[in-house]
Length: 257
Image (tube, rainbow, N blue to C red; front, side):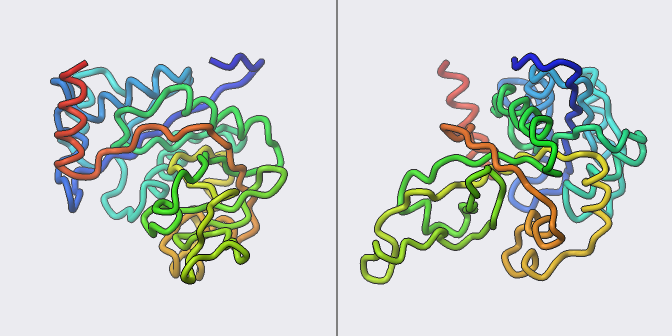
């Protein structure tokens, strides 16, 4: 843990039952425990002052009660985890300066130190409203993959842009019209720390034009002039669970350890 005087943060874990690729995903068992419990335990180990699971489903609420989690029931109308987070901030009446970390409910292997590091980076960068991690792009395949979200980072660490396209475009290093190198390219990791006031403001805005074009919610913040700090990690945390195949693979790995 990183000792910082008078520093605290809150983790909120959005968890919904309806998943197109893996229905009931938060309740999927991993080594005998529901996935949401794994995420909750990682968040608790990060040193957060509070860990809250935000859901709209009574089955998830009941499962969380079994392992003693703090649960906030939220609207079923939310279209994103960020909106669910904002409802929790309002219901709990968190102070504007409170740091809220959004940990996805399908990240059972997320390192606790990564959760804390993102919160710390927002605490230390007072001119930013949001913090989120990035890791170096490791291959041309990653750079060209539209499912791998790229970020461009300024010299001071702030975000310049996010895109599914291969950015930055190394004009002098192309092969057959495609980039042949990928230095200074960063992969975005979907973990966010917000100041509560910024989260309230963000959730009140409608989707912005670039956000709708790229289908990247964080562009709404940039389009409205918010500063996002990009925390550079040396390596990416383990990936989340999106499909039944991901779940089976993770369960098999844990069983062999």
